[in-house]
Image (cartoon, rainbow, N blue to C red; front, side, top):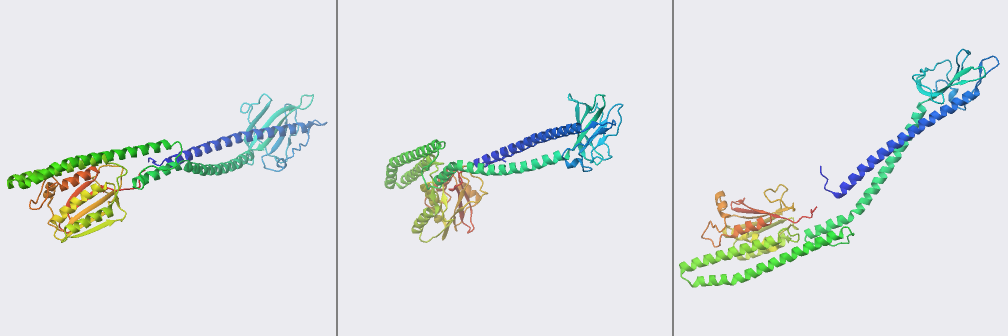
Length: 467
């Protein structure tokens, strides 16, 4: 699964790296300590071996004599794994000397081939004693007098001592490293969160721009982020200038065409009825077409602008008030939920789309029209993919005769009028469709619960989720 949060990525990487590093360090230190403990254990046995050698001689009767005192009670206690043994070699025969801890037990001795002597004529090997202890043996052979009589010396130590020492050290080491690791992760997390805090401020500033609460990326940003903030502000300023220039050009064009079309409409009134009606209808069609394309040009100039925002409730309330005055015999209901709902559209475009739908509904309604604006569900389909993942559903419903499915397809065609007895150019629904499409939304027509036509608009809403 891909992690999208920069903070989560950095925290994950530092956590993984710290964990791996501490585990490797722990294993390395534990291994080095084991080797040091084993080397120290062998040196201890070697020292004890030579203490025994210095304590044993051949007496006047030719017997081995001596009582080595190694300063360790374990050599006096049975079955401890700590023993010393002195045995005569060659033709020299006498009773061997053994430590009290060994008693009458024997220690298995490997052959010289299996455990050869080193250059100091010493050898070290491990065996298991009669009590089941795993012991390390230090052995050498020494000539004790001028007659060439020699003896074999052995000193053993219990290997469990080394294992217990290493186990205790490793346990303490891992606890210390774990505590250090947890502390380091906490410190790293705090440092990362503090270091990335300017990015969170930049995100919050972008959210304010998206919500229409600000027109620039404002804040005290560090040197690394400041160029990005400046470029974003420059982009917003450039976008604003382009929109204003497009609006000015659209206004100029509309003003230049308004008078000629008005003249044509006036002249049509004084012409003969057949010719005048033709000129009037064509002039009205020209007026609608020009207005439609001007709207498309203006919308295209500001589409995807992060500054496009219109609060739904006040804009729709104004439209409903106007419609109530123009249609005193028709009841208009307005529902906006939640009250702070906002649409990512220019106010003029929102009013034009909804106004067209309200005019159509009032024209065909018997007595009632309802306008609702709600948040669309997460399962909204059929809209173009956009950075905005939040949508608003606007619905205009009347209690008129409604339309059949084939009539709905005809009604959406430009200039098509299903009822020639009603005034209009037949461009209203096509204009609504074009404007909604330009904002990556859509228009749907169906039969409503009152039996009349239900026109539903899916439009982009304002959301603070800009990540």
